[in-house]
Image (cartoon, rainbow, N blue to C red; front, side, top):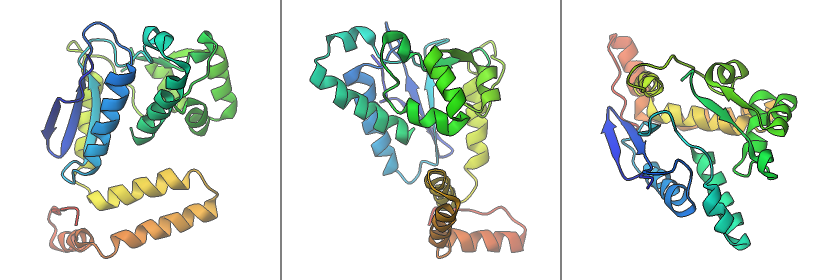
Length: 232
């Protein structure tokens, strides 16, 4: 089974350890719903500043939906399952391969792929990848802007995880409320025109002004020391 119950918590970093004993697909009751609940619980934990998803299965992160299970689903179950998967993703190595290959099965990406991919790499290229059900490797994904980093795999098979951990350690010392507001401004602003986006940024900036962290940052700069942000 997939497990989202096993966490490693250190340095304000929460790591999900995902594994499956015999298959590598997202089961309707196992992965999507448990992971969705886990993400909702993380939102309530103010001590968590970064979240990393990794797999304990060598060479495999996720192979998409469990097609054998999907074949047994009643038509009434498909909609709620896809909706939950879409909601989950909204909230979430060079040898790696990725792609939206649903058209091979006479369906379309249903967890948000038709909307997110064009926003990342443009409409024309997104159509090409989805229409052709093309799979790209890590280096190509990095070139296209699908991922921000592509690293050479190491002997232990955890090069991507170590890279993610290093990035988390870069992010965590910064003001947590500022990170949250910057994330909100970027995520919401990219969906609207520039004028509206600037208004969103202004609203988010207003949220950091009264914080203790902002005063701590100014004091630390003046005293030439490292700030101790508490998310307050």
